[in-house]
Image (cartoon, rainbow, N blue to C red):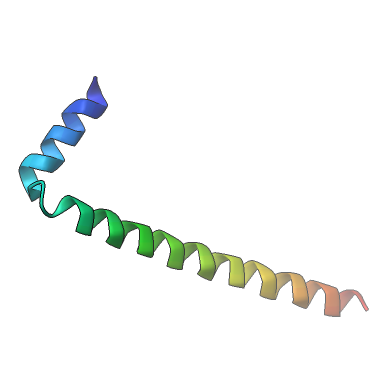
Length: 53
């Protein structure tokens, strides 16, 4: 029930025409964040492997 209220509030605030654009922007932001954190983890793994040698 609370998710329905949140969805209704979002539609009222931004309008139904803006929702797909907001969803795309959010998806792109999450993808960039995920890629950046994965890159940092990969660099840390490489550093740890070099230190172990």
